[in-house]
Length: 131
Image (tube, rainbow, N blue to C red; front, side, top):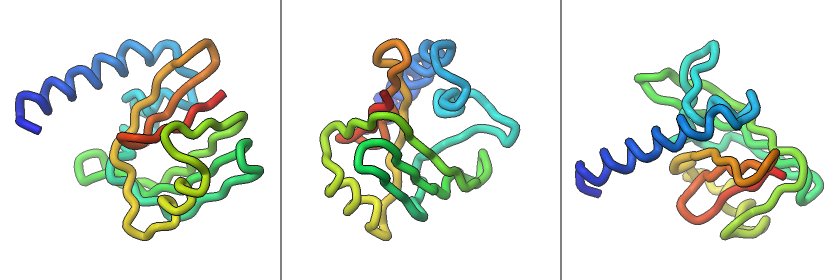
């Protein structure tokens, strides 16, 4: 991606985050750029340390090591509860991806898809819908 395209994509991403932030519950606001007591959260290049799925579509837990030198590093436990929809993948593919030792989260974006329905996009072809 050329520098200009990267800057435009970054500006669009930040504008989107500002737009959705007021509609997000507190537990998701950090993923739209709101600083918490420890600073900013970035899942970019985050490594999955462990995960659990139980039952298949009701609870997904991810332990992620993430951050960088600028914002600092941290371990996060992400727990998705409710009805979980995978878009662009299935549970077997998700398990293979999460188990692979080289897996890193590419980026993340949170969005409001309906009242009390949220999407956490974690890669270019798949996302987790929280319902």
